[in-house]
Image (cartoon, rainbow, N blue to C red):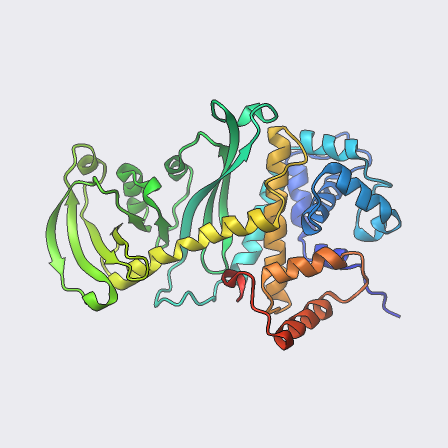
Length: 390
């Protein structure tokens, strides 16, 4: 008779373990390790994310209560002591889990490639933004932000088809957002949607030369000369569609090519926006709609801060913090992969809530999630966050 695995094992069964082993080997993560392997560390930290554990003591207490099931969870160590997990987070290179997260992202993106953005646009669309996680200066002195506090900053490039983070850079709080453009590899033909914090025309010209498109909100003091104006339908909020050249002392040198300026009035908020783009083909309304989609990256940051453990850390070193963040991202992407592979209609919030209570049960994962989806439809429950309600 077929024995159903623990829900936790079924979830972890979607991991590409061959890729994980390559990541461990690349950074010699298990050199001199006899018992608590890197995979054990990943499973324990993933368990902490899925069940909303708050501390090492919390993790240890929960796993100790279920110690007879650790082997069936895939954790081969006899026990998981707080000191063992703490040392692993402090010493094992966080790059192992960063590389593995990128492997999961490469699996997830094709699954969501056909998602409809609601725009007549076949190009890949990215939203670039950063979010700051405040830390205590006395506990995290390596992440100095200001004279009175520390912080780490998550610079994230979000693929808006599926809301999958394709690029993440973790820095201290002092790194300005625009500097991330220096380490970003532009994708020809893709659109990059950015806020005013990324206005640096020399760096934007680098994107342009790479064949990428950008839509960015202009600063109020941007100096330019108008060359040409196209007619617009002002009933939809558009005010002007112009071809301009920059005329500032430094900006004209930094970006010597013409730009497209679109002025748009949002009737709902009463605000007026000025957008700059290097794409002269797509309709002006599409440019305004693209910028509105940038808010999905804000919702992404809000979502992971609320539903994953990246605001309270299990260790204080830079390595421990980055390890926890990258494993949290891996869990987020893994759940997104499972959602698509099993064709689950429920949103990620609902899936995480169900998993948090059922990891030690022996129930078919697809049956468990499908039943919850049917229950939600009967009760008329709405998604907590429509962003993830595909």
